[in-house]
Image 1 (tube, helix red, strand yellow):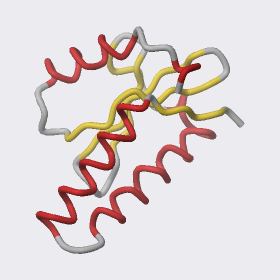
Image 2 (cartoon, helix red, strand yellow):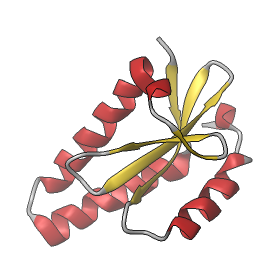
Image 3 (cartoon, helix red, strand yellow):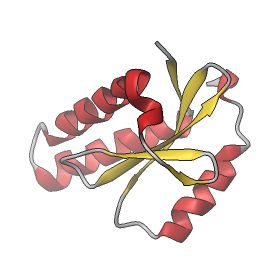
Length: 109
């Protein structure tokens, strides 16, 4: 089983999305979002390379039923989650953030 690591910014992004769901949706929706986020991350341990590469060395999985995507890449013996973002965001923004996070060292995560 492959180890999953998160860049610190990803966890912050996920918590902000959960807070928005609690504020704009209903109480507990943010917890449901986080549950889906972490369950997909665990799913990647067994099926991470089953998804296709979207940009450079990054794979993407959609966090159904939420309109968010999780981007990750292989790094040594790990899969490193680099971005969680709403799917309505600009593809240009997604590529920009992924380029920035491509250079971050997951050993510090």
